[in-house]
Image (cartoon, rainbow, N blue to C red; front, side, top):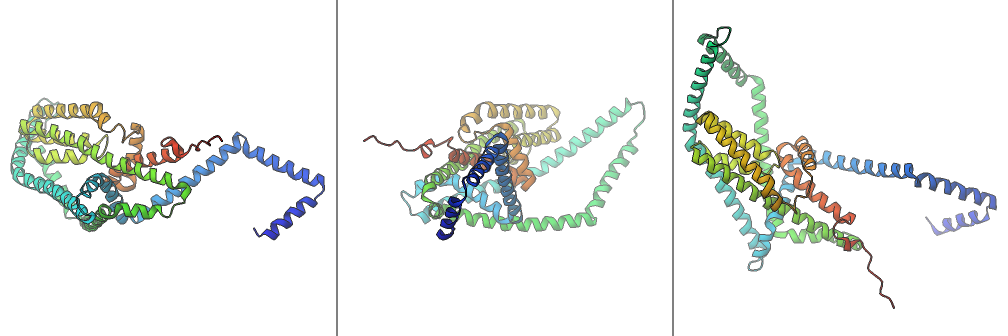
Length: 394
C-alpha cells in the first residue's frame, strides 16, 4: 500500500467521531471473538487442511500424468540415498566421478548377476517342474475319480475329459481373440515404457551418485536463511530414512530368502533359487510381499512334491515370517520405520491404487520420510531449531 494512501486512511480514521471509532472497535472485537472461539478456530484449521489436501491431490494427479518421469526419479532418489554412504567412503580415496562410476557399475553387476542366475536356474529346472506338474495333475485326476465313486451321482471319465477339453478350448479361443490381441499390444506398449523408464532411472541414479551433494546445495541456496537449518535437517532425515529403509529391508529380505530357499533346496522343491529370489524381491513390499511369495513357493511344492512337502514348506514360511516380524524387523527397522502398522497398510493401499506395484513399493518409504520431515518442522525432532536462544544476562 502506498505511504500516501496509508497516511490518508490514518487521518480519516483519526477524524472520525468517537462514536464511529467505538463502533469500529466493537465490530473488530466481535469479528475477533467469532474467529477466536472453538468454532472459528476449527473452521480455520479445516480450511487449512482442505487447502493442503487440495495441493496434495493436484500433485498426485500431476505425478500420474508424468509418471514416466516421476517414478524413475523417486526410485533413483531412494536408491541414491541407500548407496550414498558407500560413495562418501570411496570419495576419501577417489574422485567424485570415479566413486560414482564404481558404485553405479558395481550395483549393476550385482543386480545383473542375480537376474542372470534367475534366468539360468529357471531354464535348467523348468523341464523337471513340468514333468512333476504332469504327474501331480495325473494324481489329482485319479483322486477326483476316486472321490466321484462316493458321490450320490455319477461322474464318468468322459464327462471329466469333456469338461477339461471345454476349459482348454475356452482358453484357446481367448488367446486367439481380438481382446487378447489388444492386451498384447498394450503389453508391448507397457514394455516400451518400462524400458524407457529403466534407462531414465539409471541416468538419474548416476547423476545423483555423482552430484547429489551439489544438487542439494543448489536447492538450499534458494531457501530463506531463517528456514535454512530446518531444510538441512529435513534433508538429513530424508537421507537417513530412505537409506536406512532400503538397507534394513534388504537385510530382512535376505534372511527371508535364505531361510525359505534353504528349506526348498533341502526338500527337493524345483526352482528353489528363483523362488528364493522372488521372496527377496517381494519382501520390499511390507506386510504382504513375503507372505505372497511364500504362498507361491507352497503352491510349487504342492504341484511338484505333494501335499506333505507343501505343508512343510508352509510351516517354514510361517516360521520365517514370525521371526522376521517379532524379532528381526524391530531390531533392524526400529528407528527407520517408526510407523504404526495401520499407517503402513493405508500407505500400501493408496500407493497400489495410484501406481500399482511400484506405488506399493514406494508408498512406505515415502510415508516414513514425509513423517520424519513433518516432525522436523513441527518441533517433534530437532527441538533446538525451534527453541529461541537464551539471552545472556548482562
